[in-house]
Length: 242
Image 1 (cartoon, rainbow, N blue to C red):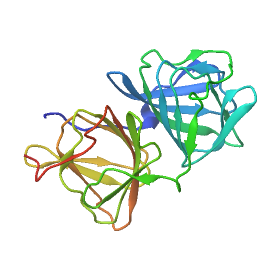
Image 2: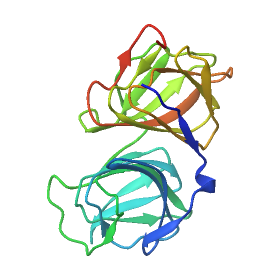
Image 3: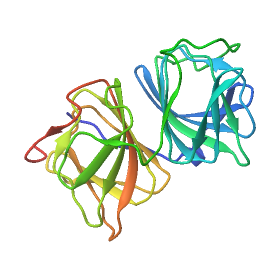
Image 4: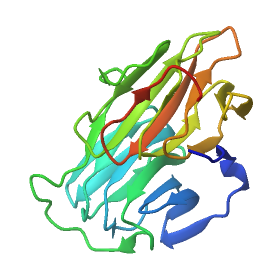
């Protein structure tokens, strides 16, 4: 499928405050999926989203509260899932809390809400970076996920120094990513002649069915956070760019 990889630097994206205490930047929006960077200096107001939240804590520490007396701690590197229509708020610790997340079915953003006793199946889930499980394979990449059964596959992906993944695409999935460290380079195009360079701190979007391969042009390992939004097949490995 034709198309180009798009790259965005969050530092150059407009900020909004959809509810008090929650600063939000929309980095990409594709259909019902938005990639947003949420920043909380102290505490956000209670709010609810129509869809689910699949997030990665980019910086800081704090907690996500889901009732007046129930909350779960958050720290940099944690991954979290907030179910749809769950009233919650974020509370920062000593430093700003930053959460990079895909939100689903949420084109109008969050709405202010009052705390309510959560249902047993509507509590946020938080998984630490040491508790991820292996997921879909591609040559020379290590992919791990906290939520293997979710409709959005949130992954931490690692590539060794000098590694080049095999050629692949992600079917009909909406694909967003973030370079934790790097830089990384993604090759694509009819003959593999195009290269998208993603530097540390940048976000990117890869069109559905775009055949590509991820490479690490440095001698040290690098890590990315990836969201595949849609469903299986998550990865389709192919012989080459054509």
